[in-house]
Length: 255
Image (cartoon, rainbow, N blue to C red; front, top):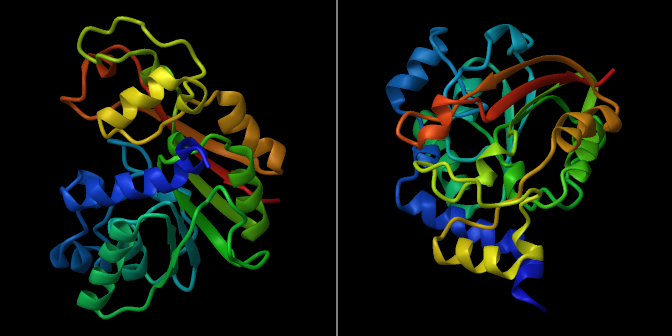
């Protein structure tokens, strides 16, 4: 098998390395943050900077939440502290280890499942009240199967909260010079030069997606879009953030 045909394994191993090296999305919440969340002082991110509005969430008590590609011990501990029953589904062993560490430290139960979200989810129909899905579709080639599976495992009336990029960042190789160099769609599985460049830089194999795929795909799966907001990258991550938002978060409901 061509190594590129097993790209999700490559991305899983990449995230393991990033987590081991202290990637900011791999630093779990502290004990103090967990205690503050129990007291109602909390925030979570779907995109790099802007917190998710609290009114996007149903009441947490007894809420069954699926953290989809959301490992790292950053959001699930907060939701657990607020009274939710959480399941984490991620393809990085290191990210899942952070979830396990926080759960053991704080003494709560969480279901931890390692798996590839490009394949059918290992959960029954209508298992969850809410899915929390931070920016991660950029690591998969096809988005529609993910939206379809989200729709399947959510209960009627359930909520999908998803973060995503709008594709603009894939136009550039240098985020300081901002010279347009890459045509879209950005797909390293179809471009050997891109593939080798990403592998050399340890960037994982990433893909651009259109709004038709990201938002239109949710609608095609059967969701009803209720809210969205845009976000910019973190300060210090290149000049593009000074000119345009490059991320968005959506709130959608299964009728």
